[in-house]
Amino acid sequence: MQGADHPDTLRSRHELGWALSEAEGPDAARREFELLAADSARAQGPDHPSTLFYRDDLAEAHRNRADYARATDAYEAVIADYTRVRDKDHPETLRARAALAYTWQLAGDHQRSIRERQTLVADRTRVQGSWHPATLTARANLAFAHRAASEFPAAIGLFEDVLRDRRAILGPEHPEVFATREALARTLQWADRHTRAVRELKSLHADMEGFLGPDNPRVLSVRLALGRVYAEEYRLEQALELYEPLAEDYERLYGPDHPMTLVVRLWIGAAYRAAARYDRAGEVFDALIDDHTRIQGPDHPDTLNVRSWRALAFRDAEQHKQAITAYQELIDDRTRLLGPDAPDTLHDRNGLAPARLDDRDHAGAIAEFTGLLDDRRGLLGTMPQTPF
Image 1 (cartoon, rainbow, N blue to C red):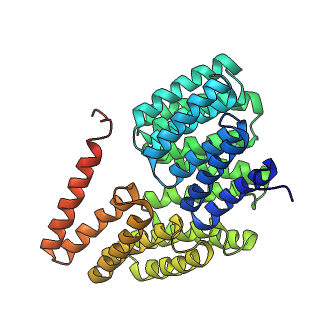
Image 2: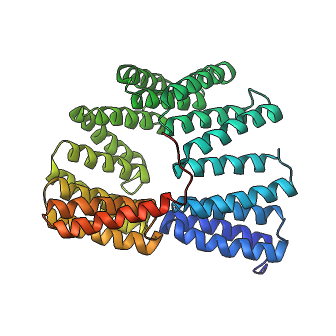
């Protein structure tokens, strides 16, 4: 009716790209956004706002598939064009800069991410004021960047400051206040300040449940966070006492195939594995692999992630042959989808090598470790080094 180059058609393809990402994974989205950005540039011009927006989505698709080098290049190019076409202080320019900082964080370049986050806080404050919601979000993102770098005292101080200001502006029961309290509690836990972390999460759960009701998604999220604190402290029975009814609640509210139902089931499997209940963990992971494959397809990152957990459970249970097979098949798929040097591929190669050693395949283990070391050296030689 409207033609392939009509703006509405292009917008529909944009929605299709994100639908493909959800259904088939980020690689499918990347292919669609590459074509969409090219078609929009041809039909509407390279500087049209929609063309820039679609290029921004392409950068995000690269990031979502853990191709951080291409994501960085794509974000830097679109930021330069946003700055030229719209202005360095335009909201889209600032938003894309935040996305680039997050990409560096995911790639492990923490100090570069922190520096960009600090500059963004200053720019947001100058342009929009210190108490603007976007400025508060930039300050919270700086706290997350410090946390990702394991700089916990700095992160805790920043979260406490953001919490104080959000409470003053928004009130104690605003969703952003609840979210900041949860982030602070999780940071306290990672900083080994466990007693205060549990206290904060319990208090947050009580406040949110009283205000929002027990079935509110944010309340369920806090229950999950508290379970994870217990699990990470190896209080595994307490974690399972939270996880198992939580999985039932997610299934009751959203259905068995909802992403959060699947996530909680994954944490149940992880808790059983940590408790050395390997048969039970294997049952959970096997069922999850079947469900993720059915819902999202065999190549979706979530499917591959559960397969990685399954391989680890085989290894922990000293089922060496099964572990080697699981890791090798997974590495083959990761390499096909992401390439041999992608972080997830390297992670699973790092599981295969000790699995061969556990099986007394010393020659195979040495070959795996040597190849992995050579590849990591090659990658690190091309990346900025972080001083210790």
